[in-house]
Picture (cartoon, helix red, strand yellow):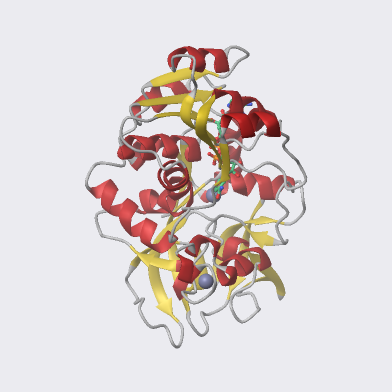
Length: 367
Ligand SMILES: NC(=O)c1ccc[n+]([C@@H]2O[C@H](COP(=O)([O-])OP(=O)(O)OC[C@H]3O[C@@H](n4cnc5c(N)ncnc54)[C@H](O)[C@@H]3O)[C@@H](O)[C@H]2O)c1
Ligand SMILES: [Zn+2]
Ligand SMILES: [Zn+2]
């Protein structure tokens, strides 16, 4: 069959909207008709080459839709199921999966970066030339063949656009707050970068009962959105921002600072806003060739902890279930995060909008 999809054909972009060939799902695979797909900054990192994706590929790693065909040996998913797509499905048996670190699953991780499905081939092509599956799920496409294990069934009442965002940005931000920041009632947290991931960290902090949730962004227009999603304070990112946060925290600093941009200078400078004994969570991802430096004596003497945080920072399949439930209970207002909807043909407008910093999350809405 044919599908209209967004491809990356050369590092640096731009992306292209093309009609491609999609072959039938094979063993353990299903065909998904995409309902919605999100634009995450990690797609932009792939475009610029900061994260190095295998190309040519179909981009996109936030998506949800309806299963419209299944291949042989598909066990749990059926035609008609509404599913969210998970870019690190867990194998259940590797070193990490049996230690409850399923998001680090060696099997799942290998698959994401290869751009190939489990049998080592691709279902997408252009004039007979294979095109790769970015993150194994290539959601910026009207239809896509994915592994059954990448599909997580979702309740009927969860809109596709909400489920799509839960599939990366929301799971990642909430994971950074709840699992890596281990926020609990009464805590103070600073979230540096109020984009899709940072605002989801704000929602996660709110769910965890944090008392003070300080969002920081250079786009002053993010103030209303941050407060609307649960922030108690908003600080504009300028030279005085860290001092302002110290003033708000009795001069001590916050229990947890979450860097949700991926800027090494900010990772370095915002360590000053972590209180002694507190934690800095790095969830924004800089270029893979950048390094960040800290004065280790300061870390030692003030017993600060620096942690990375990847995807849901827990079993992502389970996280999708839990976050859908939290959305339905009104505890996770993901729909307020969505600030713009575009057709797939307007993907460049959506990417440009994200780069202004003014949007919450933009989604591609499919017919
Ligand atoms: N750890 C993971 O598993 C994981 C998963 C998804 C995304 N990410 C990463 O998280 C980061 C954020 O992704 P996103 O989709 O939320 O991005 P986004 O573009 O939606 O948001 C980024 C926000 O940062 C703000 N910003 C940028 N530079 C700034 C600066 N110098 N000072 C203050 N604010 C600034 C922008 O205004 C914007 O609001 C990216 O690096 C992305 O690759 C990591
Ligand atoms: Zn993402
Ligand atoms: Zn595993």
